[in-house]
Image (cartoon, rainbow, N blue to C red):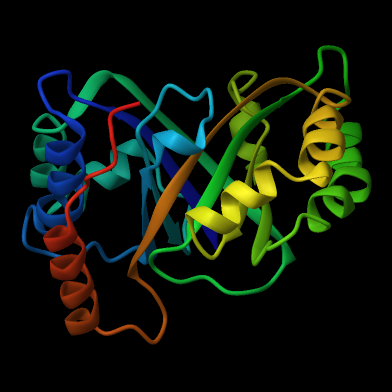
Length: 245
């Protein structure tokens, strides 16, 4: 399946509470219809206190059996209302789309409420794409795999079609999952991350921005709509009480 990632920032007029609540509670039902080509869907809500230098506040992820173009997505029933709804909570000048093929390295747990680290990567200047892929998979992956508390890890490689038009801004996205904020913080403060993972990124990337987020699995195999709506209601009731970054 094709993995679509949509990075965006919140509208300046909204505080974090309003942004995340709208994104979780209202945006999934804007238009009132499901989108046929979407097979799985995750929302990622940034947790500022875990750090990261990415300019975005959230990342939507969906998986499709077909390579979805902007034209195709605009023609699908229900998408027009969702696109209109973006203006209610997204910064129109801070959006970025990335389409990838996934390489799962650690096939472990994924569930709502976990913390995901999302790293945007661009290979070093002058480095061949094949060499970037080889280093990332063969050298960097075992280093990341040694992080304490790591539950799931995948490398998301930019689709080949993107290189037919121009050099894409990103060559890949790396995703690492942890049980909760405490386990994510422990991993980020670990010797493995500070002395191995972070320095090794400099060996093969020229751009490496990241954010850490609370994942919400809103369309997932074996998960009913009732379960999803119950999860949304419970999360909205909790509120976003973490301080502003």
